[in-house]
Image 1: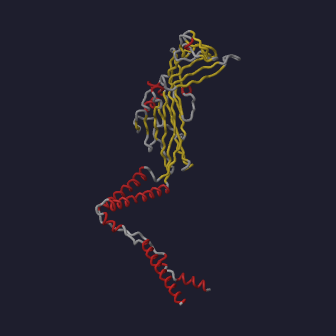
Image 2: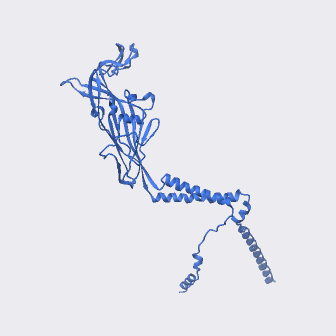
Image 3: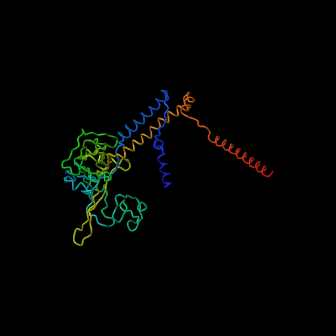
Length: 409
C-alpha cells in the first residue's frame, strides 16, 4: 500500500498549470518604415501570385486530366468531270475512298484511271532512257533493257503514267471544292468522371461555317470558337482550304494534307462543353507538297481468263481529324495545396526584412541587441564547477591522509 500511496501523493502534487502551459513566440516590434514596406511588399507580391495567377488565371483550384477522343467525318455532295467531251458525275461514294474512316477523310480532286492492266513486260514511261545502261538491272523484274526510248520492266501493264493519255484517263473534278464536310467529335475524362461524355456526334442538325465566326488566324492555320459558344461543324472543301490559308486552285492538281483538330477544355461537373476547332495545312514543305494514293479493282474479264485490274491514282485533299482535350474538376486538395504554398512563400517576407535589418541597414548593430540575446557560456560554467569539485576532492584527500597519520602516532 505504501507504493500506491506514494504514487497518489506525487500525482496530486503535480502542477497542472505547468504541465499544460501554453508557449508562444515573443515578437519584437521594430519601428522602421523601411522594414515594414519590404515585408508588406513581398507579402502582396506572394498574394497576387498565388491568388491571382496560380488560383484564378492558371485554375490552380482544380485537378486536370488530358485525354484523346474520337472524331468522324461525313462528306456529301456531287461534282463532275469532263473527259473527251463526255461529262461524268462523281458523288461522295466516288470521291471519298475509303468512304468511312475514323479520324480521317479523303476528297479527290484529280483521278487517273489505267484500265485493263495485266502482268507482263512493257515500257515504263516513267523511266526514259537512251541506252540499256540507263535502265535498272534487277532480274526478273528488269534486265537493263532499253527499247523505244523507255526501260522495259515486268509489271502490271500498261504502266501508269500521268502523261500517257492513250492508256490512262484523267478526270479533273471541276467543283470538288463545293463538297461539304460534316465534322464530329467526342471526348471523355475517365479519371475525373467516367460517366461524363462530351460529344457532337449525336447532333441532328449541322452548323454551317460563316465568315463572321470568331476566328484567330496565323500564316498556315485558323482557330474557330472561343470555348464558350459552339464553333461551326459543317464546311465546304473551299472553306477548309481558305481557313488553312490556301485555295482550291492552288492544290487541285497535286492535293494537300489538312489537319482539323478539336480542342476541348471542360469542367466535368457541368453538363455541356463545346470545343474550339483549328484548321491547318500540314504539307508545308515546298519539296514534298501534295497528297496522292493508289488503289485497284481486280477482276477476270472471262471465266478462266487472265487476272486483270483497273488502277486508280488519286490526288486530293487529305483531312486528318483529331480530338484532344483537358478535363478539369474542382479539388479541395488542390486548393489546400496552393494555400500551403502561399503560407510557405509568406516566410520570404520575414526573411527578407530580417536580412535587411541585421546585415544591410546602418542601424543593424542596434537592431541586433533587440533581435538577438546572448546566453552565458554554460560550457565555461561547467569547467569552473569541475575545477571546484577537483579542489574539494584534493582537500578531502589531504584531510584523510592527515587523519591517518594522527591515528598512527
